[in-house]
Image (tube, rainbow, N blue to C red; front, side, top):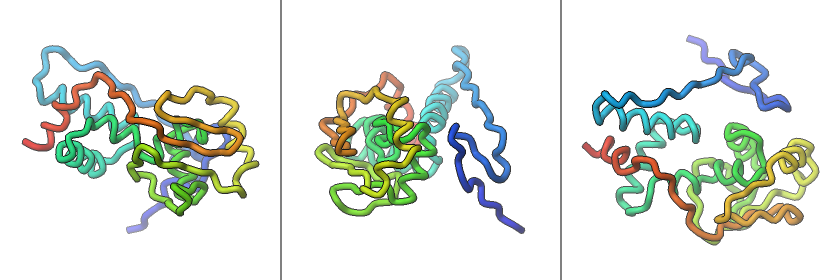
Length: 184
């Protein structure tokens, strides 16, 4: 049985070029039905977060166990992932593009190589863009479009450096329910 590569490149508008993904599908997220069970509401909230942050089931399950063990909020751990910080700070236009440029070694974490997009960063970590990528059009354009960064990240555009200042604030999503979804 042949396996196909899902994606080879992304065009300048953030859409897939090669393979099966020429037409981008819009995912509609429906509101949960109030008459449904607790289990269905937990499942709905879990799927909502997985789709927003482009997580796979195995990654999400692992993050739930780690958050339960360390007694940290789940959303904080997801927000501090390497790919999410690159997207939020404005180096990429989409989360998928952030994963792709991390995989191609554009960045250094604390002056060491890291091409794993699921790395959870700590307070005080510094992310630097490699000097040979300073003048790539894709990165310059994404900086012009995205100027809003959260207050827990400091983004120095001239040095092309990101610092994590403090823990992100959590959203009001049913985190305990989602963690309990896996621990039953």
